[in-house]
Length: 174
Ligand code: S3P
Image 1 (cartoon, rainbow, N blue to C red):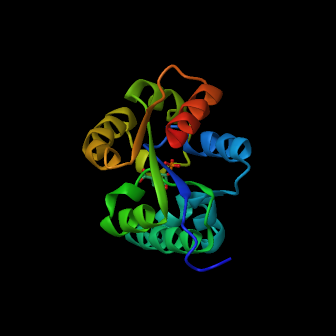
Image 2: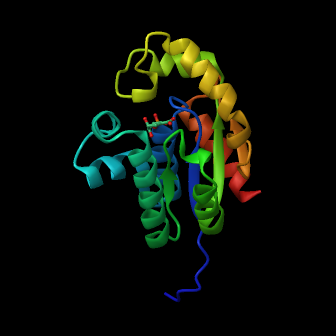
């Protein structure tokens, strides 16, 4: 295929617990497209867990690696569904990569839906703190303006996975 072939990746962004991985998998199946989850790619590249990467190497190392992996997945994929980590939206460089290689879809969820999904886990280092609910609300508020830079926003509260996927497909084909 020519190297000028248009990149039409679908990047799912959103806060931790917004359902990016679950929805990404179903979306990719429905559209018959390859699926990548950036956190899984990062963990495999670092031969570690995300939790241990944060603990042993720190957040700056994680963010640099996240950009590297976003770049390598984007450069090899033309038409894939790519679930990102909740903090990918913080760097301009990541936006340049996503915007020039496809469409960005924001899975918007309110703090109550998010909290239901993240409260019992310990795999998210940024929420491994005493006041995790307050931390999550604060981070969500701070990040809202970054998520809103997406091409498409899907409000997911109260929707099933299939309903959310349906909404994404509709808005991509409109
Ligand atoms: C992060 C979100 C996590 C993971 C890392 C940092 C963030 O991914 O990339 O813990 O900064 O919001 P999920 O959004 O898949 O939980």
